[in-house]
Amino acid sequence: MSPPDRILEAPLGRGVLRFGLPLALGMGLQTTFNLVDAYLISRLPLDVAEPSLGAIGICDQIAAVGSIISYGISTATAALVSQHDGRGDRAHARLVAWQSMLMVLGWSILFGLAGIFSARFILTDLVGAKGQVAELGTRYLRIMLGGSFSIFFLLQCTAIQRALGSSKTPVVLLVMSNVLNLVLAVLLVYGPGHAPPVFSWGPPVARALGLPRMELEGAAWATILARSVTLVPLVAIVVWRFHLFRRDARARPDRALIGAIWRIAWPSSTQLVIRIVGMLVTQTLVARAFTTPTDQSATTALGIVFRLETMALFVGLGWGSAAQTFMGQNLGAGRKSRAVGSGWIAASYNVIAMAILFLAYHFYGAPLVRFFDDSPVVVGHALDYLLIVAPSYAALGIGIVLGSAMTGAGATRSTMQIDALVVFAFQLPAAVLAVTLGTPVPTHLWYVLSATNVVGAVLYIVLYRRGTYLIKGSLPPPPAEA
Image 1 (cartoon, helix red, strand yellow):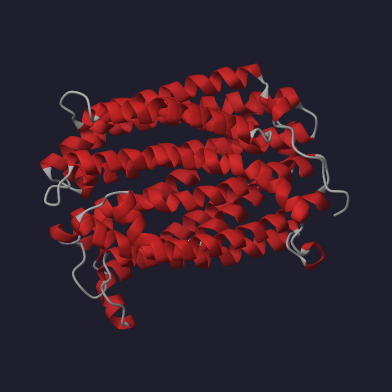
Image 2 (spheres, helix red, strand yellow):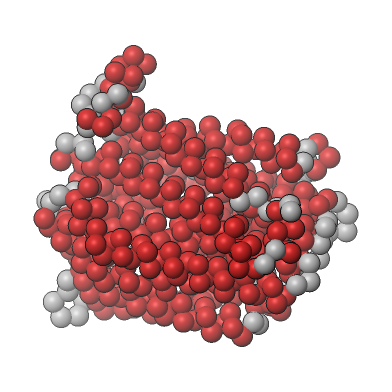
């Protein structure tokens, strides 16, 4: 049975599991390699490691803004491609795929240039980073934003493949990309200098290749290079396996079609940017209320736990991607009941995954944090965070998966409105109160984040059950000609 047939015909529980499990595992493995990057940085001299960990905790959230806008384009593309493919209209699916690539190219140029010239302003004037965190972070951020095209096109190519029913191949390539990232990071972070025993092979190789010791900047360059290399086979597979981007589909920019994609994309992009704004505000409040130029332990702890928390986020996005594809393909084929059921099933699988993750952090949180930084103050802040926030990961996952299913129906405005309501009407006001009333301590903020996840899950469950997104989110008809 071919992938599209499995999505439309196989028993729903087994079909979602077979399609979604590789996505969830692949996204989770990708996070573990990101954690290895943080480990590499943590083994630098202490005066470099601590501010570097704080810097990547902030910079990764800033860089995610660009990726999230690109992800919105990818989400819209996947929704359109999956529904056209579900109808059996591969010609229009190819046309949408090409026009969306032109959109990603334009965004890559715009965001990359803006980031290169504005990195210091963003980090110091907007976020309020201080001392070495600001200095190291500015150089790191310039590289990550300047090379952001690599992650934008990775997201786009994998989303298109997933929409056409392929979940394993893009995940395998993403994992291979992260293995390459690890190898390059060891070579560029440590160079010919000292490295931990487990990476003792790195310095001789770096010395032979004439590579310098770049520390935090080396981690950034390794990421950009690894992503760029992985793009080559990804694009080749899209062209040769799915017959996309060939000469007959490479039309000039079609303003009408680009506009149709953007009308679906911008609410999804805005929704995810809203989530990042919530996280950046948390970073900013911690930096301003609980750190000084000489004591940045709270920012360092937050940088570590946010890295750990990406496991919950990415696994949820994996199951959400499965729900989005099943929703789009089955709606395109006129199978509404099956489309809606796939969202509930994917959310249930993700709840199980989040329960396992919570138990792992509950029993092994301390050694995990010490893996990156064994400072008692940093470990204390991080464990407080995990104790309070990790139990709410199941709620976070429910919101992610059901929201992704709704985007598969094209209801990106509904999901944007839910997240905007949660962040601006609940999270941000509560967070400000947490650091201004009484004697503020970081745990007050952690309770706000945990409650935010629960509030979001409740709203998504209510709206998904009502089903109004199936009408509001109906996708535009296919273009008049391919």
